[in-house]
Length: 192
Image (cartoon, rainbow, N blue to C red):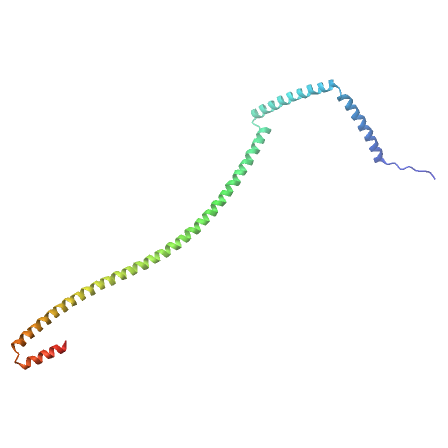
């Protein structure tokens, strides 16, 4: 029998990649570890930065001339949009609070209307009671004047009675001898 070896392509690729990586790293390390390369990289970086700034300014001028938005304009627009959304959210919250306040005020107004209607009913009742009281007062005044008239008549009657009793006494003195007048006097005294 023959001994057969199995070929592992992944293992081969892994070994090849490892060797290639170490060789490239060594090459980069050798080329970047010298001062001339670092100076050249610094000069290239500075030059690249200047060209990039000029390109940005040129793009901005061209965009302004063509009336196109730049990255800065879009960034500012995004900031303004976010601020607008925050303000809209704030306004929406204030609107909800106002709606709650208005509905609360409407309930208070409805309660006030109920209380006012009850007050009006009470005032009408008081008004009718006041009218009744005024009528009763008028009737009481009339009764008072009638009682005063009766008092006056009674005082006149008592004055008349006194005059009659004085007259009777006077007559009795005059007519002491007449028995009939005495009987009248007794009858009159008994009626009192």
